[in-house]
Length: 315
Image 1 (tube, rainbow, N blue to C red):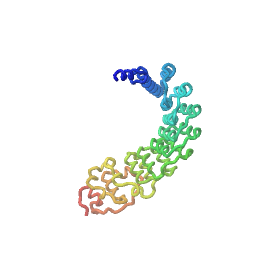
Image 2: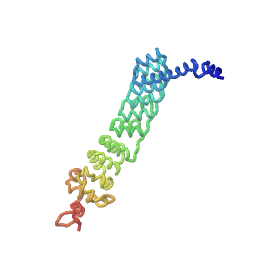
Image 3: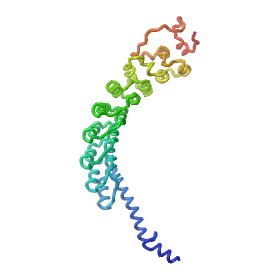
Image 4: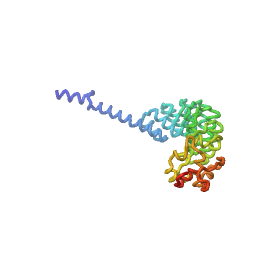
C-alpha cells in the first residue's frame, strides 16, 4: 500500500510530481508577470512594458490599456494596441476623458475604435475640460447625464456650464437644489448664469446654503434678484442671524428661535436684533424696510425685541 502511494505521489499525475510542481509554478509566474504588465502600463513605463512583452513573453489583461489610458500615456496605449494586441473596455475612453487627455482619447476613438459611456462627458466636466467635452459631444457623439451639469456647476466651471446648456442641452435639476450647492461653494458667476439664463429658482434652500458657505457676494446677488419679500421667503432666523456673522451669539442663544422670528420671519424684529450690533444696514443695504413705530417705551425708543435683547422685561 505504501509503495503504491509513493508511486502515485511521484508519478506524472501525483501532486508532488515534478510535472505538477512545474505547472503550479508556471501558473504563479503567469499571474505575476501579467500583474507586472498591467502595473507597468498604468505608470506609462513603456520600456518595461516592451521588456515584459518581448523578453519575458508576459501577457496582460484589459487593465493594461485601461490604466495606461487613464494616465494619458498615449505611446504606451499605442504599443499595447498595435504590438501587444491588448484589449480594452469602455474604461479606457471614460478614464482618459476624465483626466482631460485629449490625444489619448483621439487615438482611442480614431484608431482603436474604443467605445465610451456617459461617464466620459460626466467626468470630463468635473475637471472643467471644455475642449474634451466639446470633442466628445461633437465628434464622439457621447451622451451625458444630469451629473455633467451638476459637477461642472459645483466646481465653478462657468464656460463648461454654458456649453452644456446652450449646445449640448444637457439635463439638469430645476428645483433650486443644484443652485444651492453652487451658492454654498461661492461660484458667483455660475450662480448668476444659472439663475439669470437657465432660470434656476432662488429658494429658501439656496439662500441658506449661500449663507452657510460664508459668501456675502453670492447672498447679496440672490437677495437682490428676489424682488418680493426676500428674507421672509428665503431665510429662517437661525440661518440669517448666525452668531459668527452678526456677532449676536450670546444674546441670540438667550432668545431662542421662537422669540426672534415667526413663520415667515418678522423682518422688523430681525432688524431690531441686528441693529443692536449695528450690522443689518451694513450687511444688507439693498433691503429697504418701511419706517414703523417702535412698540416699546416711546421714551426709551426701543422695540419689545430690543428690550429683550438688553435683558429688560417688555411692557
